[in-house]
Length: 197
Picture 1 (spheres, one colour):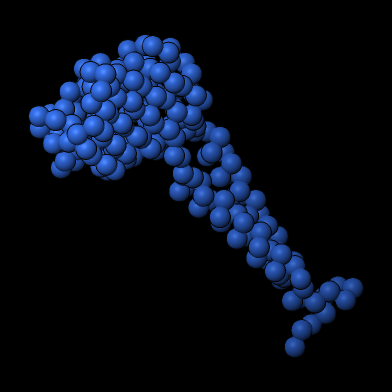
Picture 2 (cartoon, helix red, strand yellow):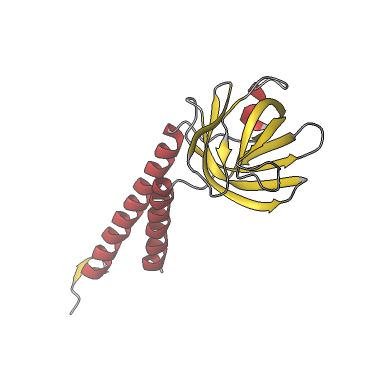
C-alpha cells in the first residue's frame, strides 16, 4: 500500500523523482566526461598526401616477377588537410618493402617533414610486366597529433624508367573510450526519458 506523504505526493513518486535526478546526473556526467576526453586529445591527422618517384623491382628480373620494391627516390606531389605543411617537390625518405609474401610491418615506410607512415598491411591488387597495383593500411604519425589510421595505394609501371605513385589518406575511426562514454550518456538520457513518461 502506498502512503501519502505531503500534499498528495506518494512515497513512490518521491522515489521516482529521486531516481530520475540520479539518472540525469549520471547521463550529464558521462557526456561531460566524453567531451572533456575528446577535447583534451591532440586530434587525428586529416587529409592525404601523394608521392611520385622511381623504383627498381626486387626479387625478380621484371615488374611481373618482382616480390618487392626498392625505392630510388620519392618527392611530395600532392597534399591536402594537415599535410599542406609539406612543400610540393620536397624529398621523401622512403624505405624498400617486400609485398610477396608481405613482410610487415614496415616502420616507417616513409618520412616526410614531421610526418611518417607505418605500413601495416599490403594487398596485391594486380601485377603484370607493365604495372603493379598495391594497397593496404597503416598509421600516420606526427608528434603534434594522435596516431591516425590510414589507407594507401601504390602504383608502379615499367615505362619511363620505372616510375611509381604513392598516395595515402586518413581513415579515422571514433576512439573507443570516447564512444563508450558518449554511449553511456545517451543510454542514461534514454532511461531518464522512459521513467519520465
